[in-house]
Image (cartoon, rainbow, N blue to C red; front, side, top):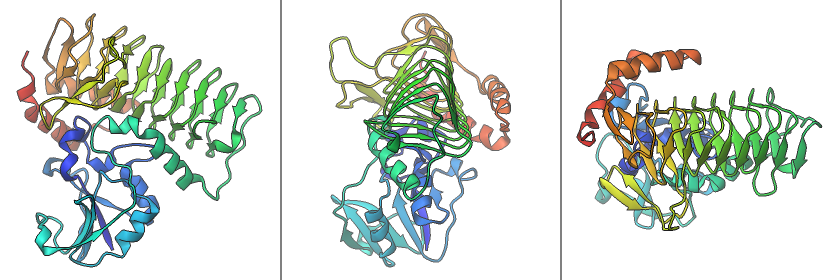
Length: 391
């Protein structure tokens, strides 16, 4: 059977992260959504996404295809229901189609052509940007159980102080010395070839993915995920970093999500709580307004290739797009459109050529090439985000 993860109806609600990737490649918990499905299904899974992303993220089709709404995370109940679906059957949760089987994955879904089957189990959903951090504890525990059950952790060095060691799992090649690991409130997972330097204090739930680094003297609170090849230091609380990004110095990052290839300058801080303790509203590209999150704590949403200078301050509930440079003193607005350059005193357009030159250098440092495919995607993002750059 061929499985395809479709962006579904929530893609625009998950911008700026889905400007540069399908919904399937959002990281929450330890793994991306696509990786979760592949682990459980034990096969490759492709994505049905926007045309401009399809060269980098191609869809694989077959005679019979199971289309899955990527905003609904897998569990064993979901898998069991999927594999029992037959052609022209659809799985439904609360009147919402979450999967269906078809010969033509590119055709618009017409419910009149499908027999509906009710699915009555609870699923973790990613329908808004703030779901990524607010549901990270639940997703991280699920991933931890899935990845580690029946396996033996590498030994934990006795230079560390470990609380609830049964909830700590260290992959081969990972290193942690002279640190405090407290896994009483959630698991701690250290991926292959990851590094926790000396003098760190980490509370679960926490995931450090492959080749990622916690520099010396960090204070990390759960539920936090640091994606592959990323670096953190300072104070980090309930945040998700997709990968290849750096918050390598002191400063606070809380209730936040960073995409890939981001860099947070030294002593940069984001606020995650309003002075009047009111619930936070956050920019939503789908509604083109500030939506109620229902959360009292909500910090920074930052798209790929964006950066802050040293001593940058970001207000509660700030959304930063793709390829943004924030560098002037004071609090910038709490919605910064993609390809913007500036800060509290104003912004100008960050032209693609200049942005691409910086991306080439940054990516080359990690052994990754900035190629024509990446340039095409980002050029498309530049064009479709023009309407929000009203300086």
